[in-house]
Image (tube, rainbow, N blue to C red; front, side, top):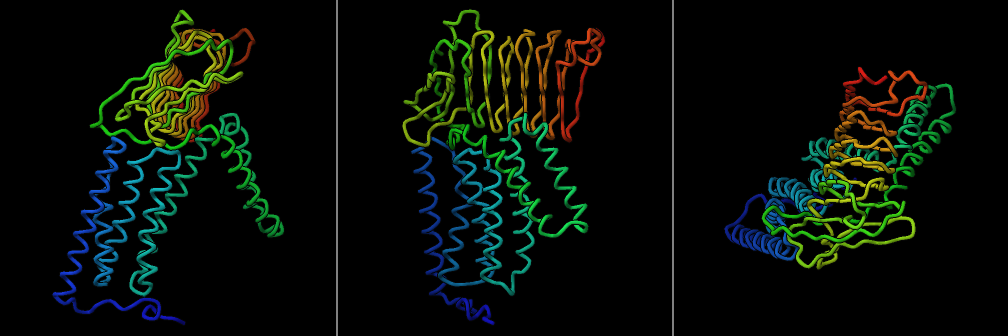
Length: 402
């Protein structure tokens, strides 16, 4: 069996002044190049990037290459992992951002063990923890991508099926148990990935020090068509207008001069997006939709909050972790709300459209005197469905519901 000395050159027991001088020059030069590259990227994308920790980690790795010592490699690898995660999260916004960040951290710890397998077995523990956190965050992101119609029925059935297979594992052939669990996992992922097509791609994050820019574009006559907006981590405000000619969309961005709102006027779906002067500059810090009454909408965010006034139509608002607040002003149409971990607040105000509010772990609050609740006596059945897997549910002011 090959030992650590067979796989890698041994560390230096004594660092000579010449080796120390060469190491320090290499570290300082690497640090300057990394910081300069980060500043250049900031100027290019007009963004605030977290590059310092990554520069420190890379400098330590380069120093280790000049004069190999265990401590320098361990610290450099771990800091590089966390630095890469921080830099990545400051650069782009994507649904699985937390998962990728934790994977960077896991790789940093795992690299210490790979290089020093006999001296760094401890590194497997934080590497494993980071990997578990990455898997958990991926699960949360996947749940946020699954349509609420799926999560309300299919997800519980999948969980029941998986639990039943585990309970019956001694009574069933091992191949059936393993095959069933794999099939359930594949079905779960396939359901989630069916919604990934709605994602418009990575968004460059806007730095707080960059200049703000507003872009406004008129909306075409929807005429019953669906208006779709994928907002990423931007905030979304939805209001109604009396005149269809006043319908418009406004995007507020930072550091994106020369951008423009693009309205894809399709036959059945009208999509709204934002382009910038370079390919990755597609992000906005906030959106404002001014839509006609009875407009059909589908708005999705990853972490951005959604605030809306509902005046009819078929409206779907979804967020992976952002809060959703809706003020109901009309009892026509349907309202579907879903947030994986963010809170949902519906101010029914005496109106009762068909409302479905669902959250995996966030709080769900319905406030008002909605018709169609369990208290209604005319036999029309419930118009409001509120579900939460693990979060609290609060329903208030139903005394006059009948």
